[in-house]
Image 1 (cartoon, rainbow, N blue to C red):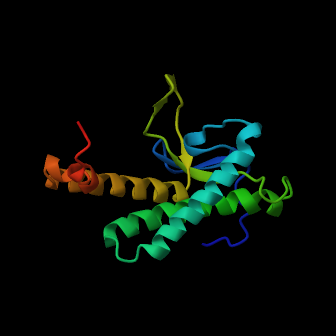
Image 2: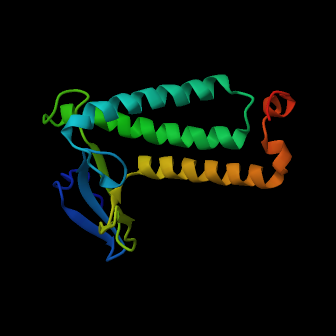
Image 3: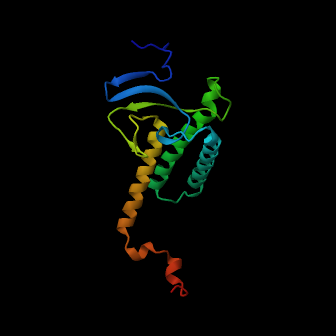
Length: 171
């Protein structure tokens, strides 16, 4: 009942799990979020930004041990997703013999067909994404929720930094 010798999907092939709702579709994403491809000329820049972002987020988690645990969890979700996609960019093309190290694409496969998004005024059908993308978006949504919740609990005066309040030279 379990076929361990399954060869997988071919690029672009789709298998329905729930017809017209959830499919597994193999897509390689050379660009950034939501399948936006800024082109080959920016591929190295995307890689460098992703590496620096991962290092920065990791440093935050390492040094901000006293920060709110919920914020640290949200940031860890973002780091986990970014690192997962970074791993694909670094190794996937090399493992499958189509690109040198650091030049691969991100593998996306979750194809939820009930959503249609509008980006830049165009309808872009159904998006295919991966669990790393879900992790990143979950972390971002949690951070936004926490920030909005913190702001609603504070008064307007407490939102002004103390350094600004104490300065006498401001007119």
